[in-house]
Length: 180
Image 1: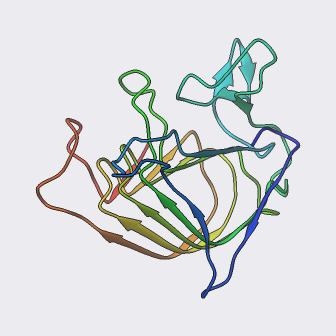
Image 2 (image 1 turned 90 degrees about the horizontal axis):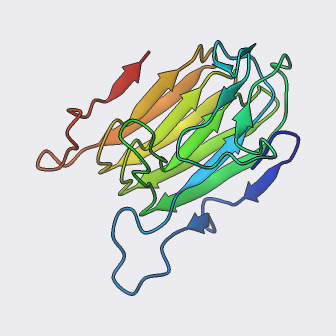
């Protein structure tokens, strides 16, 4: 979801929106995950431009569709409500992975509530800057960090739960929270 656009995934408790693998026997890493890029503040820089970052995972292109950030902390990138994301995440390069759900410069105008990420091949949730507030997040058996914040994330998280499989972790050591 590029800057200036929105995703509207507005499920209910009994009918969640499910993003999952199309494989008969799904496995973590079957697809890249959801990446939402907004225009909220970040302390990243890209090609000498302060306040703009290039999202990880190799999704940027010549048009700059993989860039995030700006000056609008109230930016609205849509709604993720009662959403389940399964078997996502992709190791593009070391330390340049796609997560189950990636936020880049996403603003407070975005609604993120009741979101579960299961069996992610990297972080379950990662924020690169931005100010989006998130409620009722559930990370289930991810490979790397459950909640990862970078580049000046300034939003609030409320009611975050993580359930880990103690026999599964990537080489980074895997943490509940990683805050850089």
